[in-house]
Image (cartoon, one colour):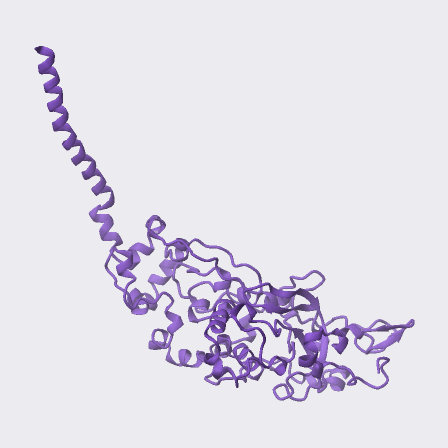
Length: 456
């Protein structure tokens, strides 16, 4: 009888305790996830984006690898790292005029709410400067209006793609097949940035995401911004990255950054729509600093009107070519070279008979992976572009003359011990691949060099 009462008592206690334990567990769970102070903190854009642990909990994983560029694959930042606003940079942002605009002033969406989907709903703009006419222009109208046609938007590249495709020019770019435009946007346009890519976030080629806690940087950093996009051309040359090359004298002697020569006014644009970058009137020139250069010495006096300064004062520079957009990439891998050709743009760079040229990515089947088997008018442009490498030295293999040799020993083609020397400096038809001949033969030096040189 006693055992029976004991079992009934135990069963009763269990029946009472189980619901009580459930209530305790539920209460503890709710206080963990629905802590009023925590909710109050997260119920704002700033609250969420300064809470690193919360961003890790609610982030959406990437569905595609970050876009790379001519410099290789982009570095990888986790989605929550790209949108975290903590650190010293955020304190700078909070003391700036941009902070007073408020998150929704640029990004739209809904503030003062903890739910991520609702905060990012409606007319939310992830990258406000992609629609700078609606956002940045509110305070920076002149810059925004001018930037729409800046060379940093890729207008020159779009022009070439469009004309090679059989249309008229950059203004017809939107008439290209939708899939080709999609390919251009996903591959070529990653370095043609917005206001934010220079002043707030990393360029796509640098991994994207907030660069410094949402601080707005008025003067972009040369290495983390300029060179991140201009890595295989400008940065590669200017910093003297390649074996056997030296950094540009403007860096080693003067410590110049890009902005010492390339002003904000140039980069932002002046409202004009140049057909290509060398047609842009705001570009700097050597003569801006080196006055009276034409008569500085006998070499300048003799050749000033023959070719651009880089023919004598550049080192070897990076080339590559023949790209399958989103396919094999550059099928002519990058290589160091130096080529003098007929001036490819005499209507733009007037007065020069010869100039340095660089092999480009252009190929008839660039867009094969995007449904365009071949360009309709590929031969509209040479496969070598006019170029001005940023690797200037006063003394190069062309300006240094050994004792007893003539002034042209470093660049004139001549016979030496029954061997032709310096021929490799010039672009001949024999240097071209079969598919380049029609497009590029018109700028080769065949038949254009002095009659006394031993190649005629």
